Image 1 (cartoon, rainbow, N blue to C red):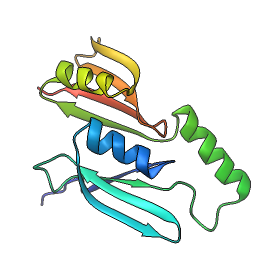
Image 2: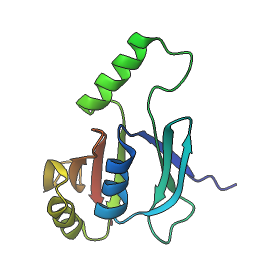
Image 3: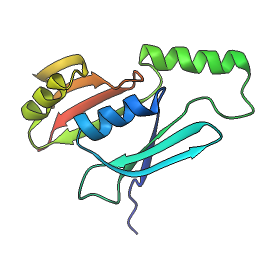
Length: 136
């Protein structure tokens, strides 16, 4: 039996900004752009890897949430404490420079971690933390 990750979900607070970051800065292809009742869901993923996608979704849309819960979710997103994802690149330094050139919010420059990984970190336009590892 084979199990794989098909979709990962991250919230966005501005679909156009998210699209600019994931498509234009990271170079992901857009696999879906769906609007419904004034909201927008984007599906993106690395080129040549159709089996793995990220769904960027409007946050706190569950009708069962209270206004206080919605406010808390938006505060956590803004702090960068709500969503996170780790990516890998075969050329971490080049990707880091590309993201810096695109104006991405740098959290950590590339460095060798004591646990054996070389990585860097950014926040996407919503505040989600993206760590990027050097692929082995």
